[in-house]
Image (tube, rainbow, N blue to C red; front, side, top):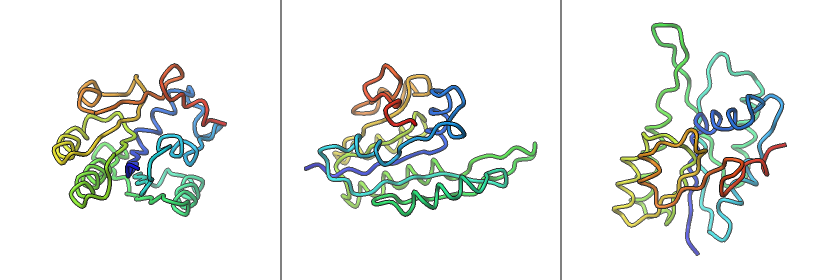
Length: 175
Protein backbone atom coordinates (compact mmCIF):
# COMPACT_ATOMS: atom_id res chain seq x y z
CA UNK A 1 0.00 0.00 0.00
CA UNK A 2 1.36 3.43 -0.97
CA UNK A 3 2.14 5.84 1.87
CA UNK A 4 0.63 9.29 1.43
CA UNK A 5 0.97 12.68 3.11
CA UNK A 6 -1.52 15.46 2.39
CA UNK A 7 -0.26 19.05 2.34
CA UNK A 8 -3.00 21.68 2.68
CA UNK A 9 -2.34 25.31 1.78
CA UNK A 10 -5.39 26.52 3.68
CA UNK A 11 -5.30 30.09 2.38
CA UNK A 12 -5.36 28.86 -1.20
CA UNK A 13 -8.01 26.24 -0.42
CA UNK A 14 -10.12 28.79 1.46
CA UNK A 15 -10.01 31.06 -1.58
CA UNK A 16 -11.04 28.12 -3.77
CA UNK A 17 -13.99 27.18 -1.56
CA UNK A 18 -15.10 30.81 -1.31
CA UNK A 19 -15.20 31.04 -5.11
CA UNK A 20 -16.98 27.72 -5.52
CA UNK A 21 -19.61 28.64 -2.90
CA UNK A 22 -19.98 32.22 -4.15
CA UNK A 23 -18.67 33.60 -0.86
CA UNK A 24 -20.77 31.43 1.50
CA UNK A 25 -17.76 29.51 2.87
CA UNK A 26 -17.06 29.51 5.81
CA UNK A 27 -19.83 31.70 7.27
CA UNK A 28 -22.92 29.89 5.96
CA UNK A 29 -21.39 26.68 4.59
CA UNK A 30 -19.12 24.17 6.31
CA UNK A 31 -16.59 21.81 4.72
CA UNK A 32 -15.90 18.24 5.88
CA UNK A 33 -12.09 18.22 5.89
CA UNK A 34 -11.85 14.75 7.44
CA UNK A 35 -14.19 13.22 4.86
CA UNK A 36 -12.36 15.03 2.08
CA UNK A 37 -9.00 13.62 3.20
CA UNK A 38 -10.49 10.13 3.58
CA UNK A 39 -11.74 10.32 -0.01
CA UNK A 40 -8.42 11.67 -1.33
CA UNK A 41 -6.43 8.92 0.35
CA UNK A 42 -8.80 5.98 -0.11
CA UNK A 43 -6.82 2.78 -0.61
CA UNK A 44 -3.59 4.40 0.60
CA UNK A 45 -1.77 4.43 3.93
CA UNK A 46 -2.33 7.95 5.34
CA UNK A 47 0.73 9.08 7.29
CA UNK A 48 -0.11 12.71 8.11
CA UNK A 49 -2.07 15.78 7.01
CA UNK A 50 -0.09 19.01 7.18
CA UNK A 51 -2.64 21.82 7.37
CA UNK A 52 -0.72 25.08 7.00
CA UNK A 53 -2.55 28.33 7.69
CA UNK A 54 -2.20 31.87 8.94
CA UNK A 55 -4.19 34.14 11.21
CA UNK A 56 -4.13 37.75 12.25
CA UNK A 57 -5.90 40.27 14.43
CA UNK A 58 -8.99 40.16 12.19
CA UNK A 59 -9.31 36.39 12.49
CA UNK A 60 -12.23 35.70 14.75
CA UNK A 61 -12.28 33.28 17.67
CA UNK A 62 -14.28 30.84 15.54
CA UNK A 63 -11.36 30.41 13.17
CA UNK A 64 -8.97 29.67 16.03
CA UNK A 65 -11.46 27.16 17.53
CA UNK A 66 -11.64 25.46 14.12
CA UNK A 67 -7.83 25.27 13.83
CA UNK A 68 -7.57 23.91 17.39
CA UNK A 69 -10.31 21.33 16.72
CA UNK A 70 -8.71 20.21 13.45
CA UNK A 71 -5.31 19.92 15.14
CA UNK A 72 -6.86 17.41 17.55
CA UNK A 73 -8.17 15.14 14.78
CA UNK A 74 -6.39 11.93 13.84
CA UNK A 75 -3.50 12.46 11.39
CA UNK A 76 -3.93 16.27 11.28
CA UNK A 77 -1.11 18.63 12.20
CA UNK A 78 -2.00 22.32 12.04
CA UNK A 79 0.90 24.72 11.56
CA UNK A 80 -0.20 28.30 12.02
CA UNK A 81 1.66 31.46 11.08
CA UNK A 82 0.84 35.01 12.05
CA UNK A 83 -0.15 37.39 9.27
CA UNK A 84 2.08 40.43 8.93
CA UNK A 85 1.00 44.00 8.19
CA UNK A 86 2.77 45.66 5.26
CA UNK A 87 3.50 49.39 4.81
CA UNK A 88 0.03 49.94 3.29
CA UNK A 89 -1.61 48.47 6.39
CA UNK A 90 -2.71 45.29 4.61
CA UNK A 91 -2.52 41.88 6.28
CA UNK A 92 -0.25 39.50 4.33
CA UNK A 93 0.37 35.82 4.75
CA UNK A 94 4.05 35.04 5.28
CA UNK A 95 6.03 31.80 5.50
CA UNK A 96 3.14 29.45 4.62
CA UNK A 97 4.23 28.48 1.09
CA UNK A 98 7.89 28.18 2.06
CA UNK A 99 7.08 26.03 5.09
CA UNK A 100 4.81 23.74 3.09
CA UNK A 101 7.32 23.38 0.23
CA UNK A 102 10.10 22.69 2.73
CA UNK A 103 8.03 19.95 4.38
CA UNK A 104 7.27 18.35 1.01
CA UNK A 105 11.00 18.19 0.19
CA UNK A 106 12.29 17.28 3.68
CA UNK A 107 9.81 14.44 4.10
CA UNK A 108 10.65 13.10 0.64
CA UNK A 109 14.32 12.95 1.63
CA UNK A 110 13.32 11.16 4.85
CA UNK A 111 11.37 8.70 2.65
CA UNK A 112 8.28 9.40 4.76
CA UNK A 113 5.87 9.01 1.84
CA UNK A 114 5.43 7.61 -1.66
CA UNK A 115 2.74 10.08 -2.73
CA UNK A 116 2.43 13.76 -1.83
CA UNK A 117 -1.02 15.28 -2.25
CA UNK A 118 -0.76 19.06 -2.42
CA UNK A 119 -4.08 20.83 -1.94
CA UNK A 120 -3.35 24.12 -3.66
CA UNK A 121 -3.28 25.68 -7.09
CA UNK A 122 -0.27 27.86 -6.30
CA UNK A 123 2.65 27.84 -8.74
CA UNK A 124 5.09 28.47 -5.87
CA UNK A 125 5.17 24.71 -5.20
CA UNK A 126 6.63 23.80 -8.62
CA UNK A 127 10.33 23.78 -7.52
CA UNK A 128 9.51 21.51 -4.57
CA UNK A 129 7.52 19.20 -6.84
CA UNK A 130 10.41 18.93 -9.29
CA UNK A 131 12.82 18.02 -6.47
CA UNK A 132 10.64 15.29 -4.96
CA UNK A 133 9.84 13.84 -8.38
CA UNK A 134 13.60 13.45 -8.90
CA UNK A 135 13.53 11.35 -5.70
CA UNK A 136 10.90 9.10 -7.31
CA UNK A 137 7.93 10.51 -5.42
CA UNK A 138 4.50 10.90 -7.00
CA UNK A 139 2.85 14.31 -6.66
CA UNK A 140 -0.88 14.79 -6.95
CA UNK A 141 -2.35 18.30 -6.95
CA UNK A 142 -5.90 19.05 -5.84
CA UNK A 143 -7.41 22.38 -6.83
CA UNK A 144 -10.21 24.10 -8.71
CA UNK A 145 -9.65 24.84 -12.38
CA UNK A 146 -10.19 28.58 -11.82
CA UNK A 147 -7.28 28.87 -9.40
CA UNK A 148 -4.91 26.16 -10.68
CA UNK A 149 -1.67 27.44 -12.20
CA UNK A 150 -0.97 26.08 -15.69
CA UNK A 151 2.65 25.39 -14.72
CA UNK A 152 1.56 23.48 -11.61
CA UNK A 153 -0.94 21.49 -13.69
CA UNK A 154 1.84 20.45 -16.10
CA UNK A 155 4.35 19.51 -13.37
CA UNK A 156 2.05 17.39 -11.22
CA UNK A 157 1.88 13.66 -11.88
CA UNK A 158 -1.87 13.83 -11.40
CA UNK A 159 -4.38 16.64 -10.98
CA UNK A 160 -7.75 16.25 -9.29
CA UNK A 161 -10.19 19.09 -9.91
CA UNK A 162 -12.71 19.85 -7.17
CA UNK A 163 -15.01 21.94 -9.35
CA UNK A 164 -18.65 20.85 -9.51
CA UNK A 165 -17.88 19.12 -12.81
CA UNK A 166 -14.40 17.95 -11.75
CA UNK A 167 -13.24 14.47 -10.84
CA UNK A 168 -13.70 15.23 -7.16
CA UNK A 169 -16.80 17.37 -6.73
CA UNK A 170 -16.32 19.31 -3.50
CA UNK A 171 -20.10 19.76 -3.19
CA UNK A 172 -20.12 16.32 -1.54
CA UNK A 173 -18.17 17.76 1.40
CA UNK A 174 -20.14 21.00 1.84
CA UNK A 175 -23.00 21.33 4.30
